[in-house]
Length: 180
Image 1 (cartoon, rainbow, N blue to C red):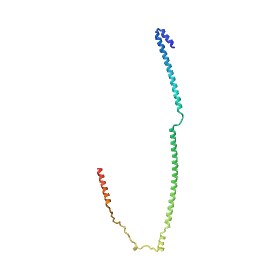
Image 2 (cartoon, helix red, strand yellow):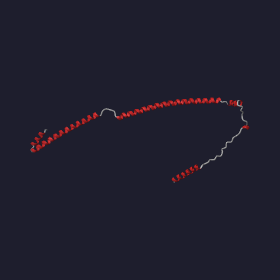
Image 3 (spheres, rainbow, N blue to C red):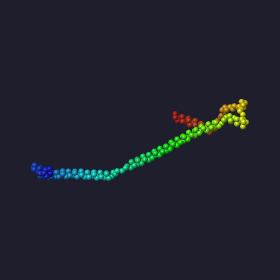
Image 4 (cartoon, rainbow, N blue to C red):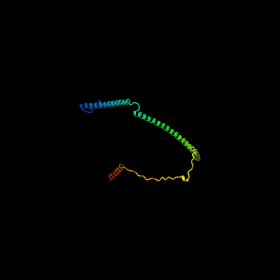
């Protein structure tokens, strides 16, 4: 129903003329407020669309700086792990090589000890000493027993050492007095 029709309907029922004008003004205000609301809603929608456009323009599909730094840090750590593993493998190989060399040297040492022991023949040494050098085994009368009993000893303390000992005693006494 249009506003003119309402005004006429109210007029037909015996309302006064000033009331018609008020009713027309009120109806006009309602229409304006509905139009204002509609225009405000449309304006808000436009503003929201602009905000969406600006947000879409500002956000670009990129990678975060922290993600790049994190990936770089992890890459550096992985390089260090690989280098450490290579170093460990080289050290382990060197340890095996040194251990094998040690086993070879131990076998050679045993062989040299056997050769040394077999090279010295006590009967040959005794024959050389008797025939070449003119030596003989000692008789029972030629054996002299030497006693190595411990001798008495004395320690000389000069006055400087006595003072040091007395000072240490004084220190111990003062320490015991402190803790009482």
